[in-house]
Length: 167
Image (tube, rainbow, N blue to C red; front, side, top):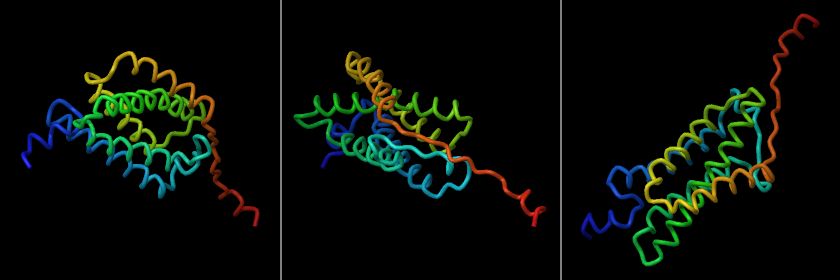
């Protein structure tokens, strides 16, 4: 198979954009894997979307973006491009809610922030090929969906070392 033919089937107009459309979803899913083992500030942040833990939502999201990155050159490419535009743009809206949640609660998760960076980078990489009307409609939809269906809480981890003086 000719390499140029294979490259036309990957999202993006340039070899670097094509590579980023593959590497960023892999990185995002990997970040969620490592988040599972975090024992610092992010271990006190918990959240779900539609009842699904955000770790799994993030992995599923990135897996779908990775899969769709390889489907853009086929006959249904326009539909896939619209799906990718909707997913990435609505994720931008969702990330605003998730970052706001961390700011309001003054607890920051480095894994969550790096995942958000992957989402913002995917948005930048794909911006030129996005349907702008769909993009502009999807960002507020992501905001609204996460405002309505995101459930988050902070389980404060207190230092109980002062108890040793009582014993």
